[in-house]
Image (cartoon, rainbow, N blue to C red; front, side, top):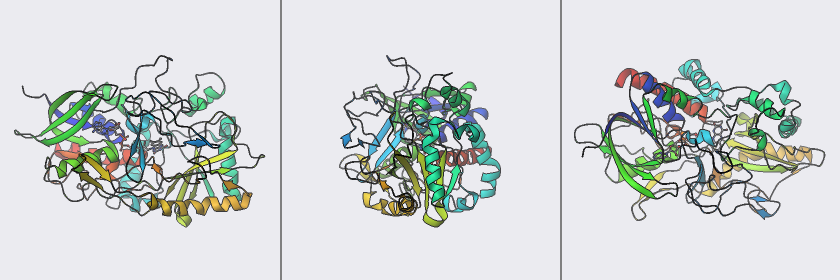
Length: 497
Ligand code: FDA
């Protein structure tokens, strides 16, 4: 029988995919979205859809039998534990030299991320996306993305006294005493909701420490924003638990898309095919990078160029903790949503997010996720022997990130008479240099694609996610991914439909 045909198929339901689906649907196009993760709309036996950060369970990890928590140690105790294998929400995807954390499910990374919605400084944009007109981005597409995502600012007067931001005020004090710029950053978490949590008027989510395994309340994920609007058009259908494995030219034009339907144990229960006039790769930097690398190497998409799989970076992510003195407690209850960072980009190549450590107990620890100027770039390659795609990133390539982060924290430690924590990422290990939350690149704009995401060699194929961005955004990436998707889909709708 002939497979069903859809005018447009979007692979993945994260930022790029959600923007593409909404704008195509508004232009009158029927859209099928295909998502390997679950739909995350049904509560578990505890009445909650999402598990708590401090108590990972079957919902927390993508097809693992043991957790792989980003902070895996505390005061000498390993934190990881056995969990049932399930199509959970956070994928700790392991490559040779790096673990890449990604959201799995309808909403992609918006389900698990910290919600920090940061627009890069205008003068730094040329280094982020050199072929893109910055005036258009800052006049039109960044504002459109911020509005579409429901970005809001914390009420600083409330923040100044809220118990749950004690950790951030300690972070500010230490930054400023060492002469660093401390900047507030917007977020998509609804800060009015958080105020009600703090006042005991609403069920707690950020104030219960929920974040990397999902938020039960308060967070404006893509499910509340772009995807809700896309579904409301009546033109968008989402198929969860469908993992795309192949895209190849169809005999009569368009493309054949092949996918595995999964059960919640990760087993393949069916193979499904569709044909599509246009296919949008929105599987995230790693998902899109891996898929295109495989499709080029195996000859399914022979027209793709040699830029496929290249220019992959980790946004310079590196984590560390500092041990504060007893007179600088960081608070028992910490809002899981960061509100601020330390900006030492120009002098030291680091922007450090003042991160919560929502353990529910006083730790006297300050935690930071630094985004740094790291020039190293990796490539995806097809491994015919294993039938998998490898990434050649090496752990040692984080050294420039550690040096950049040290421009901030060595100075703060010297000034405060404090030391680094050595217990959070192993025993006697200061730097969380084995991971990233911010994979970027793999099918870079104006290299693997034209300047609007059209893949070279195969008309009707597009990349519209973090794979387009060559490895670094100087800040947290999802606002830039969203704004770039808004820019590209506008051009594609105007010219290619
Ligand atoms: P994204 O990863 O969002 O979506 C891709 C989707 O495609 C996923 O749902 C995936 O399951 C699906 N998929 C992949 N392969 C597929 C296949 N073969 N078939 C079908 N579906 C497939 N950023 C930020 O700006 N501020 C922040 O505070 C944070 N915090 C943060 C915390 C944590 C813990 C993580 C893991 C990440 C962040 N991030 C962040 C990063 C941010 O979430 C990330 O940059 C974006 O989600 C990337 O958006 P994309 O659209 O590129 O892909």
